[in-house]
Image (tube, rainbow, N blue to C red):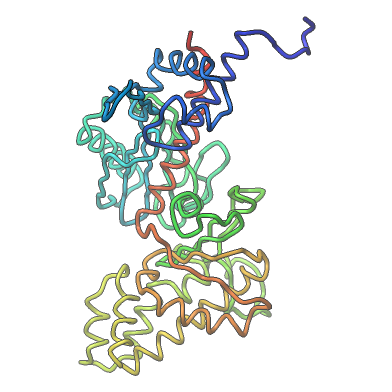
Length: 414
């Protein structure tokens, strides 16, 4: 056999059969019979039985005790042993760290959330401690943690280095990847948080069934995760989707130079974020509401994560100032969102982040303001995963990353 000829023979065929059988079980979680696997794969009974036996020897499948309810021999059941390994998804933002631990089928077995410390180095340790807490609470030994993916704001290089992170002081340049790898002795991946949120909505949430869409995070920060033909689009320098830095309200005749750069750097926010982010929403509410009014009092008391919800709640109760502010804020946001939609023409746009908690009235207003700015009718939906989107997307990414390990175990089985 020459070096370029494909391998042939019974051994190769057995390897192929194992992978085909394994993928059929992974694609349809739950119990299956040999007959069901035969139907799914098109393989013969001897081929399926041999493949399942091989996979069982390495722990990838589990046979369950047959239970008979009638005459004749009861059918044995088999399942993918998703508990043989676990992955951790971590969502990191300036205020909060969220961790979800899932088995290899994606079923969450533990979650935890902690307040983010103020410094980058402390955030790394807090994230590691939160992963350990999930492992402990789920009773999962550290050797069964197969991969960790963390989502963080900023521009992330293809090797996982955090190159730019305006929203977290001292975060850029930290060896987050290597610190977590030494702690847990497994592959660790770092990716942009909004990109991972888009991955979660595609796999588990509001964008399921849509391969070309945008996930727009609207909170204090504004960012976009773009999915094209089922794959995340990051751009040539991993900086795609930075909608928050779009300057829709600036003076186009203003000279470019250090002054313009300093304007962006002074608070870590981009031009669009200073126009529509939750910090801007609270400033507008305090400026427009009469002192002593319910809007003024609630706006002063609300944190940035809840200010938009307060505004929409009061608007629904008939507060005229709140209603005008909801119109104003959504009109501003529609200006930037229209630019994104005209360029990408997505099947759907998923709105997530703190402002999305305002609910359907937010979508109604955005649709109305977008209608005059777009060539085709917009389709906007609210995130189904809410504040868990980044951590859930990170877990989806981590599960995808261990697929090769699973296949190697299937191939190496004797």
